[in-house]
Length: 501
Image (cartoon, rainbow, N blue to C red):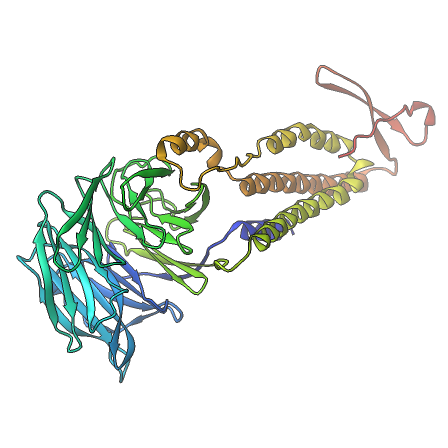
């Protein structure tokens, strides 16, 4: 019964549910990409590309050429090929850009185009322009030799160059299209954020971050960018001015390696990897840590992919293996409230969640009371032990953090960051986690009481028909003076004191 209560309580704290796990035949995964319809997952590493059906959890047949090199980045596109179809585009360490599309006959993904770009340097990032309304599909590519290219995949599955340019000192780490015909490039080592014209490659603006850029993601609708700062977490910036807004602080990394980051739930949350086995999910407006998805017990979670589809957020995470073991990929899903939900319904949902938690705690308390009634006449010392724990429970309740109102949704980093740093000790344990700890402790007390009840009944059965009653005298300096009286001799029975929980 107690384990069932603990399971229900733990599930009530989870927002994201692990729906699938995959094990590619490779020790590391460098790229993950979820299709636009949420049906397919692409994973890439040194052994090439792998495709999975998320619903059936089966690997799909696809064209794969290891001679192209290790897969370094990937993205999905919607192309007009008869009907709208999913097309996978990925880059490799040898500079190849490859496109895969499902065959209309057997639905297996086959190669429709492959080209080696420039001098054959690694393709570090690739992006698809979903706002492109003309014929073909427009793609932006960043390469290890500081080259940025924009290409067009026409209806005949042929690549046509739009422009190519070389940046002075910036190695593109992330690249993305934004409305009104622009491309943003995020530099790996120098922390530059460059805005470029997608037609002719002219540089429109340039800003510099306060740190290196391990990875970056853009929310065009909110005009925000979040980057992995490779030190203490992820930093949110304004896209147009490069002004820092706040930092989402994670546990201190043991190794400063780049970790992928993305927006989710219609840009309401920030999702990023770690080097301690968790996927972090933060609320964008407040910086509060909402959830830590347990990808693995320990290790680097360097690769993630996020996709929003009709009020459902899908998160894929991957971690490299140790030695010759296979890498691990997990898929998480959360049905979040859409933007049409009113503020009143949000408050009602929060109220109902609180009612559920209180009901669980009351259920545990009722179990303790029902167990304690049977103990009181037999083993009052157990009641005393429970009573001693009441001050501890009070202290835990007093440690519940109080959420402070946020005056500005996007306040500057200079104003918000000190608050975040002050609340770091509190952010490691949310309200729900503290309540969970309280409930689990109460269940431990109930289990101990149940064991003592069993022992007490055994002692009674082993007796000689005489029942003893434990009575209490004065309690001084933490010592309890107890006397045992006989029910057959009322003179020896003194006044007893009963302690109620």
